[in-house]
Amino acid sequence: MDILILFVILIALFHRSYFCTYVVDDTVGYKLMKRMKERGLTWGNFSYNLKHALYGAGIFRNAKQEYLFTTLLHFTICVLIYDITDSLMVSVLYMVNPVNNQTAVWLNGRRYAIGVLCCLLVWKFKILFLPLYAFAVWLHVHAIALPILILTTKYWYLVPMGFLTFYVFGWKGLKSRHDIRKKDFAGINELQKIRPQKLIIYVKTLGFYFFHTIFPNKPRMYHEFLYYFSRYPDDIKRGYSFNFEFFKGLAVCTFAGYEIVIQHNFWMLWWLAFISQWGNIYGVTQNAADRYCSLAGIGLMVTLNKYILILPTPSIAYTFFITFYILRYLPLFRAYTSIDNFHYYHINIEPGAVESRTLQATRCLAKNDPFSAYALIKQGILYRPQDFKLLLLMSQVLFAMKKFEPAQQILNVAEKHVPLGDEEDCKREFEKIRTNPSMQPPKPNRKDRRAIEAQKRNQK
Image (cartoon, rainbow, N blue to C red; front, side, top):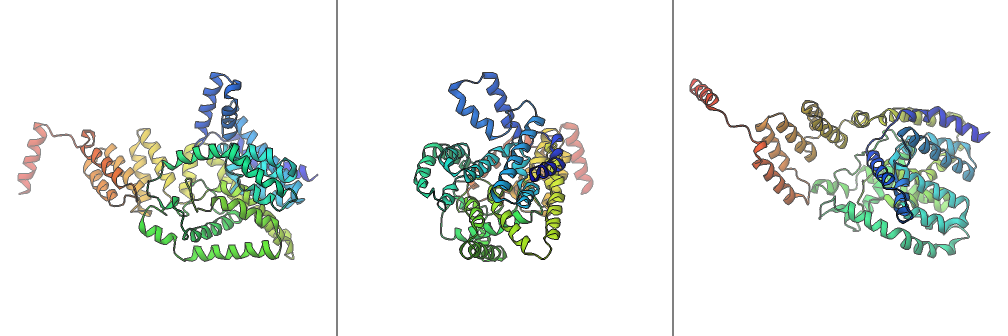
């Protein structure tokens, strides 16, 4: 009966994904798999094909089939959570929590969802730790912290083999992805420096994820948390400061310690182990993302349920959280119906955010619509007048609109806000822009020159 209730809730909420389509990186995976199918599937490229098939979109013929598979995968995860925790409400809270949208809806989040599934299957059938862990780390880094939890079981003696398994099946792929992603960062980058002060960043990160998982007021792809950290000296200083974010994180650390050490709350250890992977001690990915919460968040939903049951009227708290989660989830389904809707969703919930504005403005430029791009970037600069991305894109928009002098002026302003480590590259690129003939105003013909000279004489 409980499984049927879960299924009804799933259909009631997730039937909206039927209208969703490929967004963000989905098209990349889809096109890659299409080329693979055209070449033909052979045993020689089986491993490569399987990884990309499970990594994101492309294994099915169309978006509707892709979303159906993703929804069923999310349902399977929720059923396993119910089976392991023996709590229907924990499973319901997890199912409708919008922080999980990148594993429950986003097609390219499939690799994260499979990591969640593998960890839950291991916890259900612990004897399968080594083969499932080998598969999980071969596919993606998401489940790498699982051996920490196995140490708490009678199968603790398998943990050394687990580390060997990671080295054999996961290390090569992890290093390859690391090297590729690291190229997107400046050579001198605070994100890749490991130093004692990073503990401050770690504490702040725990605070962010704890509250964002329980109260995901603005579930999204692009977060502002530590967005400018490592780009400018003032933001590095702010990142290492003992401000409100630090003390919020310190409170979370204290609570986690209390739950783990005093209350022997295994699920809080589950949260801490898996969220620490994304603790920003060292990073070559986004500083914050909803998908990082999905595996760790199981532990928080169990802990949240524990405290709800202590209340005199748990039903009121359940009603509050489920209603809150669903109301925050509903706009996300429309966001996934097109890439334009996806970007405008982010712009609407966080007008001061940079990424979606620049991405959507770039799309407008590609469609030969510089005026729409101008409106987007102009509004963004009102929120972030010193943001390098916005300023640089505004200069490109003005060049496209044949506003050469304002474009050069904006370019001069952008040059004053170049991120750390990018100074030399930007200097060369700016010089190319300034000397590019297409970026210069056209020389006036004889008739225009006479008009300009006459205008100057009249002004005198």
